[in-house]
Amino acid sequence: MPEHHPGEMGGTMRLGKRTTVFKTEDSILRKLYGDVGCVEERHRHRYEVNPELIQQFEEKGLKFVGRDIEGERMEIIELANHPYFVAVQFHPEFSSRPMKPSPPYLGLLLAATGTLNAYLQQGCKLSSRGTFRKNLLIY
Image 1 (cartoon, helix red, strand yellow):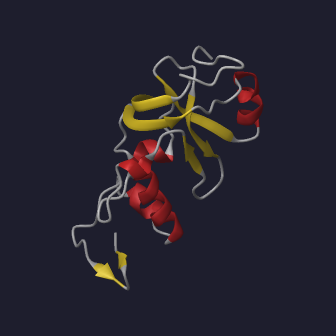
Image 2 (tube, rainbow, N blue to C red):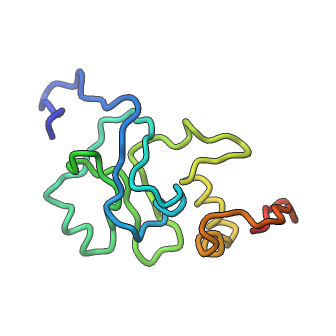
């Protein structure tokens, strides 16, 4: 990777807001973000995915659905045939708020309560009722 310097750790950390481009329309996170083509999120890491292993991962069902603008760095993964297995390189907790969780956290909450599929089928919209019942928002 261009920012990698073997034996030198200074200056290799990716910091600040970066754009992630969705590479597929069939992505849970893309739908949760409002079916946009890209998102901007804050980064603070120096982790990379070995490009030589990407094809092997994808053959086993781990899909790299989001990449950086250049298409070199893997930013978002989803595991096929799993209710909600997603991972991101950015920090969604930086933009989460108690009554407005970021899309990755919202997806986790919805999957944990068994309502993710219904939410996605409704186009990621709350019901017109927007009611609470047993501490869960009803969609």
